[in-house]
Image (tube, rainbow over all chains, first blue to last red; front, side, top):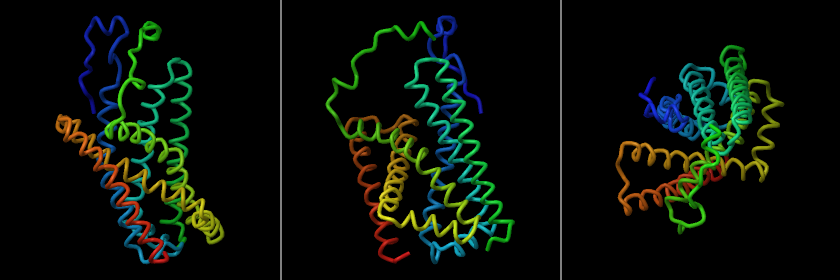
Length: 131
Length: 131
């Protein structure tokens, strides 16, 4: 997913404007947002249509591929989109390059950790005979 | 990027009369951060509680159905819909449409109304149906 960067040679030399990977990050944020639109509607609609929200019903729902696969995609896409979004916020409000790098690295670790935890839980529900 | 930091900043937040489009713009950022910082941990905790067992899930349900837990869940639902409708509006604007003043203002107001209506409808259903 690549976008032609808009920096002019002069702007790049002065360190002004988009000289790095902003274009593809911008596009990736839009692509994940479209995916999340579909998966988010699926998530809400599923919760509304399930006969109940007790553990047995949820486990049975997430035991089948029709529940487990979209939920895994929802988790992954949500964490990727959230990470992109938080990076934009950090890039906007943290002027110091060192602090910005540290905070973005921390956010990356949290996102990877959180998504992994959710996928582990999902795998246990789907394969561990929870239901 | 040290060269950029000492550049003058034109006044922005302080000089504009507030309008719906500005409210939706900042809500898009706030709801995104809220869904990330609160929503994703809740999603991970919920999936983990289902995978771990009846006791863990009962603890999740106890917190989720406490009045403070319900306030958080209703808030997350609203944030999801506000973010979703504003996100659709942003995708339309990314394509270059919807910048006429009245269209833009109307669309901004519509995202606020639609988010409140959807949140109210869903929680009327959940609380009315008694799970």
